Image 1 (cartoon, rainbow, N blue to C red):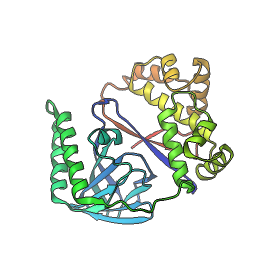
Image 2: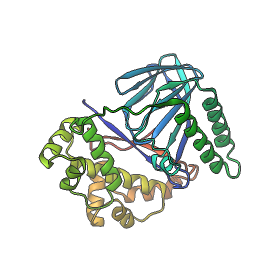
Image 3: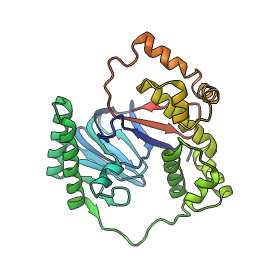
Image 4: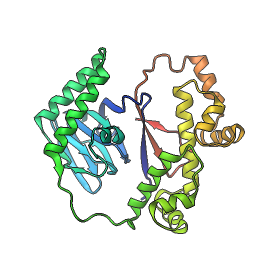
Length: 302
């Protein structure tokens, strides 16, 4: 595998851990590259036809159908027709768990045309577009209903067989998720390798083979990418940002940040002041892809 992407979902409002957006892909011109994330994702095809590759399965979805992308499934999306238009709904796994739905360890059928789920999608779209008072509470309630429908009609019964922990992709996924949950503190390779149940030497070797970079470089990249996003989205100071993202000193943070992005963190503050950087941006949840084979790349908003 030459390239591997882990997508981190950033929820600016922790009380609204939901991403919902409208997207259009054009044949031969745009696609969603292969990546994975811990949160369950649903795609409702509004028009056209999509090719969705989920792990080793290729799903062809057309108008009125819903693609269910299970937690931690590597997936990509492209258009089979000239263009495909779809709604995308992502629900945070912790939010789902708070409703007593374990979307991380359960598996669902990848394709459905369930009429009730389609109706819920339409109502969520209307609520999100109109943004009336209490619309976020409405969407949260609708997501609860969506989860009920998923478990009622799309749940695949648990199988006795499961992937062994020695499987390299399982190990890499677990380790990357652990890094993304603990990057803001001191974490050692011993700690990570112990978490995934293998030796530090073996962990470092397979991580580099699969992702193309070392675990330490990956941690370094995650911290810098998160710092970039915090500085872009908030008014946090540079010193506070560095500390919150796991750097021990402001000077070291600034040096690392510049090595990744080519400019110091102060550049973002100046850019925001000079060009009213975020005056017209809504405080919406965002998706950020981290490319694990290139420590110099900037996070790419989808």
